[in-house]
Length: 435
Image (cartoon, rainbow, N blue to C red; front, top):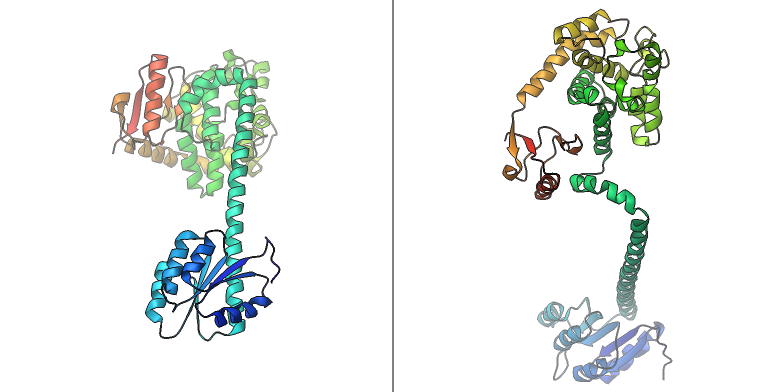
């Protein structure tokens, strides 16, 4: 009698010749495997009723039930086992049938080579063990995921309880933002929009400033990542003014008292400090800090001269002042486009980078052409359809941004806009690009 253990792999071998079974069993003593023998397919199936096997090996030619027929039935009863067929060279069609119907992974020809036989069986055992281990790991992973999900659910409930006040305050924003991405671009747009709630005069031309700044930057062959920083900085260039009193936000700079000018001159530093905790906005924060430096070194806050000021900051200064001159935020009166250009050209080489001033007129023309070339149409909510692209930012009646321009509408977004319209009792007019 052979000693067996519960942990050893199990092999069932079937043959109608008892001498062959004994020979196989002697050969397989070299393997760390329990061997069970059966003298027919019927006997083997009866054994399988009470035992599970890692490997099942059968001779092809047997009376009453062929090896192909037995292995096909064994596959139904213990599909996870590995099946091996012993066959002669003349049993090709039967071998094909066994492979197709019995899920045979390997076949051996008679007479067999002992070393090859052992290798084939040990390989089959290893594959079966690996499959079993993999199934066990998958089950463990599934169970652990369920446990983690349960833990997370409990944690979320605790967090929800402690942050109930915050959630109530931001619930309307969450409904409006719905499916928007949490990317940094969206965050920058939200910050700029937050500034616009207090600084409407200063921010109402932000989109035009942004377009002009990007056109200028493109004309200087600026790299993509630098362009992105300019875009972010242009959106947030007045974020530091939120530290100022409301009365200063709509007052022209030239009308400030000396003390007000001193306060205003600190807003780039305040902006950089506000943004420095966000690593992805560090480049933009640096551009915002340096936006009021002058070409001749008489700017603020650091008195940098010429190229010591980052190129992006010099570009922002031009785009900013061109529109601020026309909106009355710089001088005591609003200037026309021609007068704003004349002002900038006069300050070329002192306040502004002369090389950028030379390309400003072309950049303004290109920006105007881009804006004129975009055809759009304003629609009621009921006429919106998935796939339409926003031509302008969609904002609430209070001025809060809901969706960014260039956003492609989805069913979910349209539904959220409709829900917000009903909740806020506001009729939204949505401007979309013409197809």
